[in-house]
Length: 124
Image 1 (cartoon, rainbow, N blue to C red):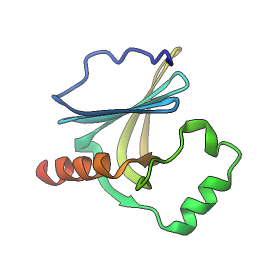
Image 2: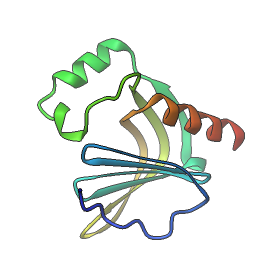
Image 3: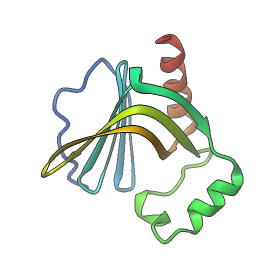
Protein backbone atom coordinates (compact mmCIF):
# COMPACT_ATOMS: atom_id res chain seq x y z
CA UNK A 1 0.00 0.00 0.00
CA UNK A 2 1.15 3.52 -0.68
CA UNK A 3 2.13 5.71 2.24
CA UNK A 4 -0.02 8.79 1.79
CA UNK A 5 0.88 11.84 3.82
CA UNK A 6 -1.56 12.22 6.69
CA UNK A 7 -3.98 15.07 6.06
CA UNK A 8 -4.25 17.11 9.21
CA UNK A 9 -7.76 18.02 10.27
CA UNK A 10 -9.97 17.59 7.25
CA UNK A 11 -12.43 20.48 7.21
CA UNK A 12 -16.05 19.39 7.23
CA UNK A 13 -17.68 15.97 7.31
CA UNK A 14 -16.07 13.30 5.12
CA UNK A 15 -18.54 12.36 2.38
CA UNK A 16 -16.42 10.23 0.03
CA UNK A 17 -12.92 8.78 -0.17
CA UNK A 18 -11.36 6.87 -3.08
CA UNK A 19 -7.91 5.46 -3.78
CA UNK A 20 -6.91 4.69 -7.37
CA UNK A 21 -3.35 3.62 -8.05
CA UNK A 22 -1.07 6.14 -6.37
CA UNK A 23 -3.76 8.80 -5.98
CA UNK A 24 -6.18 9.39 -3.11
CA UNK A 25 -9.27 11.57 -3.41
CA UNK A 26 -11.28 12.86 -0.43
CA UNK A 27 -14.42 14.97 -0.44
CA UNK A 28 -15.88 16.65 2.62
CA UNK A 29 -18.71 19.10 3.05
CA UNK A 30 -16.11 21.90 2.93
CA UNK A 31 -13.19 20.78 0.74
CA UNK A 32 -11.78 18.55 -2.01
CA UNK A 33 -8.42 16.90 -1.27
CA UNK A 34 -6.24 15.03 -3.76
CA UNK A 35 -2.97 13.35 -2.82
CA UNK A 36 -0.29 11.84 -5.04
CA UNK A 37 3.48 11.38 -4.83
CA UNK A 38 3.94 13.44 -1.65
CA UNK A 39 1.81 16.34 -2.92
CA UNK A 40 -1.50 17.22 -1.30
CA UNK A 41 -3.87 19.57 -3.12
CA UNK A 42 -6.56 21.13 -0.92
CA UNK A 43 -9.36 23.14 -2.52
CA UNK A 44 -12.07 24.65 -0.33
CA UNK A 45 -15.49 24.20 -1.94
CA UNK A 46 -16.17 27.89 -1.32
CA UNK A 47 -13.17 28.70 -3.57
CA UNK A 48 -14.43 26.62 -6.51
CA UNK A 49 -15.95 28.80 -9.22
CA UNK A 50 -16.91 25.90 -11.45
CA UNK A 51 -16.30 22.31 -12.48
CA UNK A 52 -16.70 20.96 -15.99
CA UNK A 53 -16.13 17.66 -17.73
CA UNK A 54 -13.42 17.79 -20.41
CA UNK A 55 -14.31 16.64 -23.91
CA UNK A 56 -13.02 13.45 -25.52
CA UNK A 57 -10.31 15.22 -27.53
CA UNK A 58 -8.75 16.56 -24.32
CA UNK A 59 -8.98 13.12 -22.71
CA UNK A 60 -7.19 11.54 -25.68
CA UNK A 61 -4.49 14.22 -25.45
CA UNK A 62 -4.06 13.62 -21.70
CA UNK A 63 -3.84 9.86 -22.22
CA UNK A 64 -1.06 10.34 -24.80
CA UNK A 65 1.19 12.23 -22.36
CA UNK A 66 4.17 10.32 -20.90
CA UNK A 67 2.79 10.80 -17.37
CA UNK A 68 -0.65 9.36 -18.20
CA UNK A 69 -0.10 6.02 -16.45
CA UNK A 70 1.48 7.45 -13.30
CA UNK A 71 -1.67 8.64 -11.59
CA UNK A 72 -3.87 5.58 -11.72
CA UNK A 73 -5.97 4.39 -14.59
CA UNK A 74 -9.47 5.58 -15.24
CA UNK A 75 -12.13 3.29 -13.85
CA UNK A 76 -15.05 2.53 -16.16
CA UNK A 77 -17.12 5.68 -16.57
CA UNK A 78 -14.46 8.02 -15.16
CA UNK A 79 -13.76 11.33 -16.87
CA UNK A 80 -11.26 14.16 -16.74
CA UNK A 81 -12.62 17.29 -15.04
CA UNK A 82 -11.44 20.88 -14.98
CA UNK A 83 -11.93 22.64 -11.65
CA UNK A 84 -11.58 26.43 -11.68
CA UNK A 85 -10.79 27.84 -8.25
CA UNK A 86 -9.81 31.16 -6.73
CA UNK A 87 -7.26 29.43 -4.48
CA UNK A 88 -5.58 26.03 -4.08
CA UNK A 89 -3.34 25.04 -1.19
CA UNK A 90 -0.49 22.76 -2.23
CA UNK A 91 0.99 20.94 0.78
CA UNK A 92 4.56 19.73 0.21
CA UNK A 93 7.05 18.19 2.64
CA UNK A 94 8.85 21.56 2.61
CA UNK A 95 5.76 23.65 3.39
CA UNK A 96 2.45 25.00 2.11
CA UNK A 97 2.08 27.02 -1.08
CA UNK A 98 -1.09 28.95 -1.90
CA UNK A 99 -1.82 29.30 -5.60
CA UNK A 100 -4.43 31.77 -6.81
CA UNK A 101 -6.65 31.69 -9.93
CA UNK A 102 -6.05 28.01 -10.71
CA UNK A 103 -7.38 25.63 -13.37
CA UNK A 104 -6.95 22.17 -11.81
CA UNK A 105 -7.35 19.07 -14.01
CA UNK A 106 -8.13 15.74 -12.38
CA UNK A 107 -9.59 12.32 -13.16
CA UNK A 108 -12.71 11.62 -11.12
CA UNK A 109 -15.02 8.63 -11.06
CA UNK A 110 -18.57 9.42 -12.08
CA UNK A 111 -20.04 8.86 -8.57
CA UNK A 112 -17.33 11.08 -7.03
CA UNK A 113 -17.93 13.86 -9.57
CA UNK A 114 -21.71 13.65 -9.09
CA UNK A 115 -21.38 13.94 -5.32
CA UNK A 116 -18.96 16.85 -5.64
CA UNK A 117 -21.32 18.61 -8.05
CA UNK A 118 -24.18 18.08 -5.59
CA UNK A 119 -22.16 19.60 -2.74
CA UNK A 120 -21.17 22.57 -4.91
CA UNK A 121 -24.79 23.15 -5.93
CA UNK A 122 -26.04 22.94 -2.34
CA UNK A 123 -23.37 25.34 -1.04
CA UNK A 124 -24.63 28.19 -3.25
